[in-house]
Amino acid sequence: MTKLALVMGLSCFLAAAAFGDDPDLETVLTAPPGIEKGLLEQLKGSDPSVVGNAAFLLGYRKCPQAVIPLMRILRTSESQSCRIAAALSLCLLGDGRGTFAVKRAATFDPSPKVRTLCAWFYDQYVQKGSFAFVPQGEIPENMALGGK
Image (cartoon, rainbow, N blue to C red; front, side, top):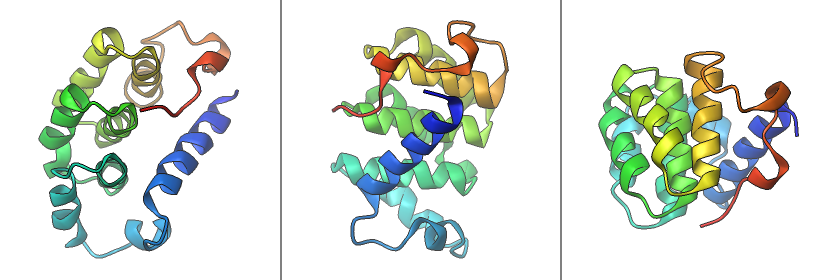
């Protein structure tokens, strides 16, 4: 699986989980700034698809107020998908506190999938060459996205 395939897969995975009957991704990404308040509230929810979706969108909307809540999700969520979305968003936001949390999760998260994707996001968005385990920019096949 190539880097592009992984990114497309992650995007499809998160978007599919999140946008069943909701507005399309482009609408949310280009919405006025006030939408962040609602997305930050959704991070407090109990539905993993809603929380993961909000985490994903806050990263792409570059919402700095999301750093601390996303760090909490990365550290405490039982959902792998939520932790993965939080890690990606923290790397996209580029705040040192959040990227440090992703780097730590790449080592200490209980899930091999989450650890691998945290390392890959960190390597791609924060510091190239940080994690040399990814051969030729690929994620190992047994690290496919999904899961609880």
